[in-house]
Length: 182
Ligand code: FES
Ligand code: FES
Image (cartoon, rainbow, N blue to C red; front, side):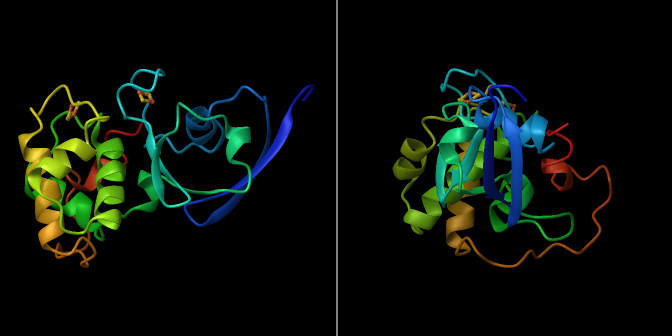
C-alpha cells in the first residue's frame, strides 16, 4: 500500500501486524482491520468514551490515537475481558446491577471502570463518578452503572464468574461483546 506504515501490537494477548494508512485511528484499526467491533465509535471527537480500550494497562479513548502511535503496545479490548459463561467480574456486576440498557456505551464503561479499580480497588461513589466522567450514557442515568462499579469493587473486582457456563442467548449480559459489538 503506497504511503502505508506497518504497525504491530499485541491485542488481547495475540500479536497483530498490518500495513495501514498513517492516518488510521486506533479505533478503526481495531474495528475494521482486526474485526474487533466491541469497541464502539460514538463521536470520533474524544467526548463519549464508547471507544475506550486499555493501552499498556491504562484506559484510553482509541479515537484519540493513531494506530501508528501505539506500535509495539499492549492493547486490551472488551473482547479480551471475558467470554460467554466466564464473564469478567465487571461485566458480571453490570449485568447484576442492570448497568446497561441499549449497551452502546457499555464496552467503554467497562474498560474505564476496570482501569479505575486497577488503580483504586476501593473507590468511593464520588471517585467512581469522577472516573467515568469521560464516558457518556444516554440511557441509564448512570445510577446503576455506578452501583455496578461499586459492586465489582466490593467483590474485589477479580473474582471468578459465579454464573453457570452457557447462558441462554436471550440473557442480556452474555452478549455484552456480541449484542452491542456488531
Ligand atoms: Fe472516542 Fe467518542 S468515539 S470518545
Ligand atoms: Fe445506552 Fe449507555 S446503555 S448509551
